[in-house]
Length: 49
Image (cartoon, rainbow, N blue to C red):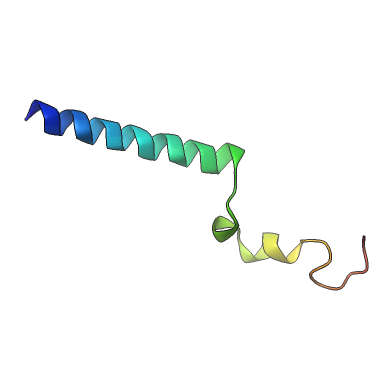
């Protein structure tokens, strides 16, 4: 029982760390909203370099 509890605590910790990293440090492409993707320069043919 003690081993199972330690595993669940470790998994919860990893999920929390992953959330904080994706929220504040790194935004993967699959988590970006459509509005953010449309603002990318060069995609919409805006003529910017």
